[in-house]
Image (cartoon, rainbow, N blue to C red; front, side, top):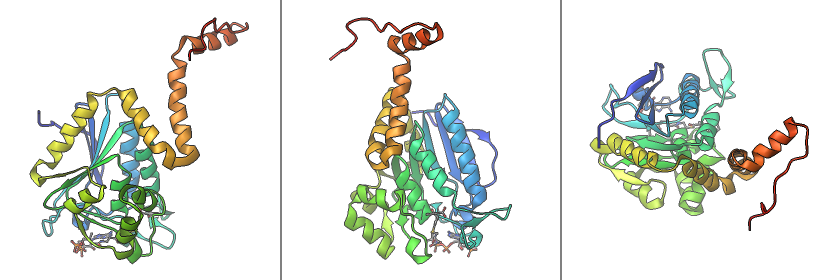
Length: 280
Ligand SMILES: CC(C)(COP(=O)(O)OP(=O)(O)OC[C@H]1O[C@@H](n2cnc3c(N)ncnc32)[C@H](O)[C@@H]1OP(=O)(O)O)[C@@H](O)C(=O)NCCC(=O)NCCSC(=O)CCC(=O)c1ccccc1C(=O)O
């Protein structure tokens, strides 16, 4: 397996954004504050995920993190909302507005028609924990990954994917333990709970993530997209149905039947869908 020769796709301040060979790598880049996100970070994440979604050469996105901290050498994935940027109604950006826009990033990850893999080299805490939960898969550093939910320490509560979807993943009792007690869990413990796909030696983590991405890229893009949306559907209610059905409509547009319907309208005639089209 080749080592990725990552090329910077766009320069940002709080994240790095690179691409190589069908894979986009978006990484938190505030390691000295355990990769906490502030409004600038979430805005940059939003832009990078949007670009990765629009880029037809990209099939898999890795959500990772730079590090370790220059202060103490500790690795982190993300420690959630930056408590120094927190105001009374959200996190305060350079424009003075109070925002909760990490939830928009969660929805981008959830609804993008491409696989998103969380690559967790260290702490995954609070809103950072929720981000790994919403990703399609999670790979974790054997030596350094620690999973922890501190929402209940700082009067926050991710009542969507971070908690309710987590409960579907690890079971109700375990999810309540994670949130109500706020303990630290190792990569192995997270794996045994069912919220991590693989525990990987730290030095091999990024290469393994790239390798998993390459395996996905060998599959049918339509299958991957439809499978992701099918698996989302039951937990996402009407929006899940809308997203899945939108892609089904796209597939229907490609049929002769759909072309006849469009052409008949444009030619101001009744459509002729032919006989024997009612396949069982
Ligand atoms: C992550 C820790 C457990 C790591 O502990 P440790 O290794 O001992 O390191 P520290 O010495 O504590 O930290 C080193 C350094 O980093 C700074 N830092 C760490 N985390 C943060 C943070 N989240 N914000 C700001 N700064 C942080 C720390 O101050 C130190 O700085 P020095 O200057 O060197 O002293 C531990 O650090 C820890 O517990 N961190 C806090 C975790 C936390 O509580 N996060 C917030 C949870 S709430 C949240 O994320 C809500 C966001 C969200 O997703 C959401 C959900 C629902 C609705 C809306 C939203 C939304 O959008 O807000």
